[in-house]
Length: 257
Image (cartoon, rainbow, N blue to C red):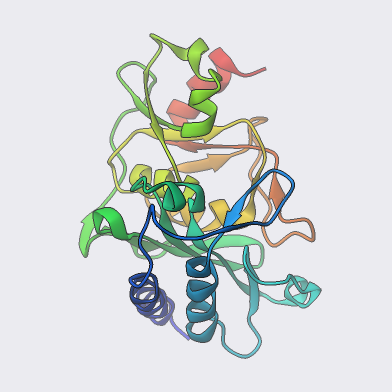
């Protein structure tokens, strides 16, 4: 099995998922609340999940999805697909064009390939550690910015609304954006300089973007400077920071600790 085969599967799955979401109208879709926090889930989430699961995993490969009941079998698999069928469901429900479909592949606990497709803006970012990153079929990569001065950093829209990014005012440009995966795709493809959050996120929010960041020559770290572990029994990250290594070093030195 080659990495090109993995990438072909990712593209096929994202294309099929984009078709599966077409019958649903963002901003005019019914939803249920699946947690005490009021996190929404729609029929679109479940439809995409079914399409991805039908295309991606092959015998012997594991599966972790936000919309599938988790199974401990994945912990014994060398290759595990970690997906978020619709990352940014809140934005989807509200009609904000900042949601996407996120597919990541982890091998032996390491993100190696991923693809993120944002239908509202027709942005497709796909890549692997062996092949680099493409943006809508063209070679892409991160910006060359090494430091915070003049940097554009994508922030969680909800964190931004709560004022959690106010302390960075003047240090760099902060741009609020919805989906975690969508933000990571933009950074990996050179559309922004970095993104981070100091609050917990699930592996399915981040895995595809982590693979793309690494493929593009960037870094995705925890706030203590360590690398995340993937395909964990409790698939939750305490936080993450994603940008070029030198930019993250400056951020950690000046703002964290």
